[in-house]
Every structure is written in structure tokens, then in C-alpha cells.
Image (cartoon, rainbow, N blue to C red; front, side):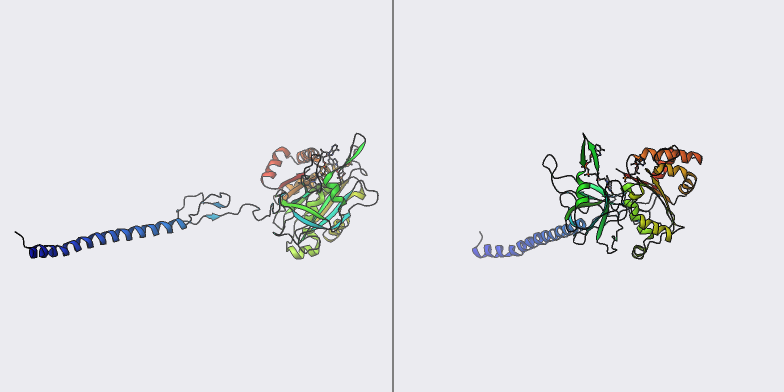
Length: 375
Ligand code: FAD
Ligand code: A2P
């Protein structure tokens, strides 16, 4: 028989055992809990470390030779990656103010061709561009379906420093499109809008766009330019960059190569930027050559209108000597219709040098030396 005192004493005697069991359970649980928290911390830290991924193949090119995985990838910049594009798009165009708009033609010229400059200084983000790019213009008004007019592209005729060298304008060289249809004169929508706008007017601008007509970086590159009419626009920007004294001070690009412009215009009075070109010629006789084809005043050897492709043929030997030099780039801009004629002339000119133009042209294109923008 147990006495009450014995029962109490026996119960008290179990207390240390119970405490020991509880202590054991608690410490074990704590250790596990701490381990779990530590594991969690490590996982969170890991997820913050972004592993360099080779997603942009054009930007990060791993060495093709077998190399240890720890080697830092070689960063190869995509060609012309720094050239700005589409800063402004049609849904949110920049409204630039017209600074000036004047005719580039002389008395007796055919048609209407204007030089138009827009102020960009209030654009935010800033609408910067480089020589050889284009901008889009959205003419005011609506089309026949009551929809806003679509944008039209125009080659930029100014350097990135602008005509006043302050770096906050862009200029265009625009011919008004006019043609006859059913006895009626039709005026092009955007070109007429542009030729008619006045200083102070606001114009919706998009872009810049285009990487096809960019100048090479090399100061000793040779630049052959084949232009008809307003196709002179990008060439005017190139030639200013090469030869305009204040522009040269700004751009620090000391052009040392040879620039050769073939220019096609219907009449002498239609020659664009002629005074500037003559000045560049006088100041840079060793670096600039200027060959004109004035279609309605001069005749080719067959008695037809003189076109730039006829001039190309006349100069075949000298031209192909230049083309054989890998520092030479060729730029073609203006009427789409001139392309077959230029191709034909280049084929004949190449033959005279024992070369095959149909093989050579793709090679030049692949090498980034054949640049075409026709419309
Ligand atoms: P629209 O009202 O659009 O009329 C053009 C349409 O009229 C044509 O699509 C055709 O359907 C019709 N048409 C045209 N001619 C005839 C004809 N003879 N008979 C029957 N129908 C005809 N232009 C410049 O002046 N300067 C530049 O520097 C310049 N750069 C350009 C750069 C690029 C990359 C491109 C693509 C084009 C460039 N243009 C340039 C052309 C310009 O974009 C416009 O196409 C041009 O100004 C005509 O536009 P528009 O609105 O006046 O004519
Ligand atoms: P033309 O119009 O006498 O036939 P613009 O844009 O000021 O009219 O100038 C374009 C120049 O290009 C003009 O001299 C024009 O000659 C000429 N031209 C027209 N068609 C071609 C062609 N297929 N190839 C080369 N030049 C051309």
C-alpha cells in the first residue's frame, strides 16, 4: 500500500525527468528551426544574384575557342548600336517649330524644292540623330477616309550639329510631288504641306530612323555619292561634315579621304546647294570631286538625256580603281528609277576593268560599303 506521502514523493521525483524530456524536445526543435531559417536566408540571397545570361548574342559574344567557364565574356558592341532610332513614334510625335523654309531653286528651274529647318530644342527626350538618317513627317489634316495622314520619310540634310552648329535643329530638302492625272494637276500631300509651311508653324516629327546610309567612322575612307534631285539631302550632310569649317571644328572628324559626288538635275537652275559645293571644291581640291549630269541641258553619247549613270561610265576606270580600295564606300540616293541604269553602267564599267559587277555588288553590300536609299 502506498501512503499519500510516498505518492507525492514519487511524483516529485519524476519532475526532473519531465523537464529533461521537454528540454531535449525544445533544443532539438530550436536547432531545426534555426537551420531552416538559415537555409531560407541562403535561398533568398541566391535569388538576388542574377547570373549573366548570354541572351543578347549580338552584344555578348563568348570566345569561340575552348576557355575556362570563369572567363569574363568578351563584350562586342553591335554595329551602330549607339545610333539613335525611333525616339519619337507616330502615336507620340514631337511637335517641332519651323525655323525657316526657303526655295533652293534658281530662276528658270523646274518644280519646287525647299530647304526646311525645324527647331528640336524643346524635345524631351532630345531628338538627336546622325548624318545619313531620316525623320518622319506627319502632315496635318486627314485622308479621304477621315483618318490622319500617314507619315512620310525624308532624308535629313543637316549634320547632327544642325545648320547653325548649335545641335538643336534638323533640316530637310523637299521636292513638291506634282503629276498630271486625267488632265488635272495632283499635288502630293506631305511634300506640298512641307513646301507651304511657314516659320513658327508646328509640325509632327517622328524618328530618327535608318542605319543604311551612315558614314564610315574612318577619316581616311573614300566616299562616292550618286544622287538625283533631293537624293542630295544625305550627301549635303556628309559634305558639310567633311568640309564645312565650323562643322569640322565641332565634329573633330578630320576627313582625309576622297569624296566624289555625281549629281543629277534636270537643269542648272535645279542644282541644289551649288554655292556650298563650289566652295568645298575650291577649298579642298585634293579631297573633293564633283561631277554633274544635267539631263535637259547635256546629252549623253547616244544623244539622249545626260544621267548620272552616263557620267559613271565616262569615269569607269577611275571609279573602279577607287572601288577596289576597301576603304571606299558608295552611296546611292534619290529616284528609285535610277537603280537599273546605275547597275547597267556599273556592269559595263566593271567589265572594262575585267570585273564582274553582279559578283562584286553583293560583296560590297556584305562588307557594308554599298549603301542605297531610293524612293
Ligand atoms: P502622296 O500624296 O503620298 O502621293 C504619292 C503617291 O502618288 C504615290 O504613292 C503614287 O501612288 C502617286 N503618284 C506619284 N507620282 C505619280 C505619277 N507620276 N502618276 C501617277 N501617280 C503618281 N522626298 C523628298 O522630297 N526629299 C527627301 O529627302 C526624301 N527622302 C526620302 C527618304 C526615304 C527613306 C523615303 C522612303 C522617301 C523619301 N522621300 C523624300 C519621299 C517622300 O517620303 C514622299 O514619298 C514624297 O514627298 C511624296 O509624298 P507626298 O505625300 O507628297 O505624296
Ligand atoms: P529628267 O527628269 O530630265 O529625265 P529632280 O528630282 O529635280 O527632277 O531631278 C532628278 C534628276 O534625275 C533629273 O535630272 C532626271 O532627269 C534624272 N532622272 C530621271 N530618271 C532617271 C533615271 N532613270 N536614271 C537616272 N536619272 C534619272
